[in-house]
Amino acid sequence: MSIITAPQDFHVEDLFVDLGAVLDRSLYLKCEGFNFAGSVKLKAAAEMIAAAERSGRLTRDSVIVESSSGNLGIALSIIAAHKGYRFICVTDSRCNLTTRRMMESLGSQVHTITEPDADGGFLGARIAYVRDMVASDPNCLWLNQYANVNNWKAHYRRTAPAIATQFPDLDVLFVGAGTTGTLMGCARYFRDEGLPVRIVAVDSAGSVTFGGAPGPRMIPGLGTSVRPDLLVESLVDDVVYVQEADTIRACHRLARHGFLFGGSTGTVVSGARAWLDENAAGRDLISVAISPDLGERYLDTVYQENWLRDIYGEDVLAAELENAGARSND
Ligand SMILES: Cc1ncc(COP(=O)(O)O)c(C=O)c1O
Image 1 (spheres, helix red, strand yellow):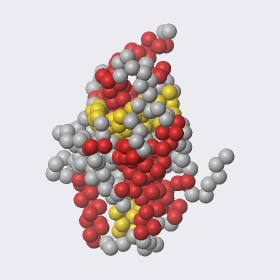
Image 2 (cartoon, helix red, strand yellow):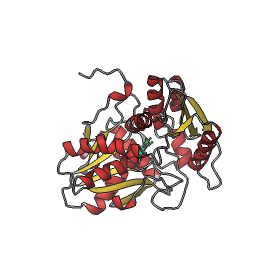
Image 3 (cartoon, helix red, strand yellow):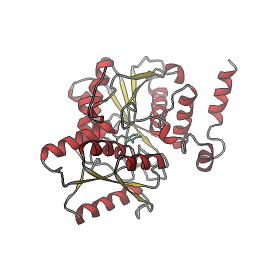
Image 4 (cartoon, protein in one colour):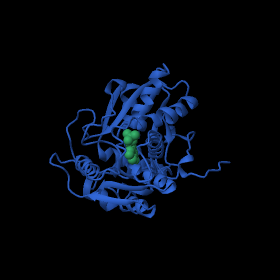
C-alpha cells in the first residue's frame, strides 16, 4: 500500500513492458506515465522545486515561470498547487487543449506563443518570452529545465538506479532526448557506477540537439530547435533519428496490442527497433527503453485519423493496418 499526502511523492519505478511479442525484438519499456502528472517530468519538477527551496531562491512571494511543451507544465502545476506557489507556464500552439486545461484546472496561468522566432523555432520564442518576464519582474523565478542540473539529477537519483536494479546485466539503454535531462541523468549514473551500458539517444528528425538541421516537428516532447545546455555529447554512445511518420506507426502498433502510449514513446520504440536491427542482429542483447508518458493526451493528434492524414498523408498507417489485418486473420 502507498499512502501519500503530496502528489509528487508517488512514483512507479518498477513497471516494465516486455515488447518482445509486439516488435519481434527483445526490448523492455520502462513506463513513466503512472503518476499524478502522467509523465516522467514529475521527477524533474519535484527535484528542481526542492533545490530552489533549499537555496532560498524560491519563496512565498515567488512566481515560478517555465517554458514547457506541456508535461513539465502539468508536473509543476501539481506541485505548485500542492505547495501554494503561483506558476505561469509558457507554452506554444502545439500544446494540446487537454494539457492546457489541466494546468488551468490546477490553478496555473498558461501563456501560449503562437509565432515561432526568426529561426523558425517555437522553443526560442518561448524562452525569449520567459526571459522578458524574468527581466521585468524580480519575483519571477525561471527554473530553466534546459540548463537546471536538478533536471538530470532527478533521473540520476531515481530513474537510472531503478533500471539498474531490475536489469543488472543491461546492455543497451534507449532514451529520448528533449531537454536531455532523462538522458544525461541515466548516462551519468551508468558511467559513474562503472556499468558497461551503451547509451543510445533517440531524437526526432528535424531536431538540432545533436547538430542536425532544423525541420518541422509536430509531436511534442522530444527534439529541440535550440541545443539544450544540459547535453554532454561525450556521454552518449549513439544517436538515432526517427521520422515522425515512423513515430506514428510505432504508436499505432503498440495501441493495436493494447498499449496506448504518448508520441515520444513511439519515437523511442521506433528508434530502438531500428538500432537493434542494425547493431544487434543475431545477438541477444538486454535492452531497455524509457516511455515518458501515456497516450490519452494525444487522442486529437497521434491517434486522430484526420490529423494524421493532413500532416503525414493518406498512407502513413497503411503497413500497420495490413499487419493488424494479418494478425486478426491468424
Ligand atoms: C512526452 C515527453 N517525452 C519526452 C520528453 C523528454 O524528456 P527530457 O526533457 O528529460 O529529455 C519530454 C519532456 O518534456 C516529454 O514531455
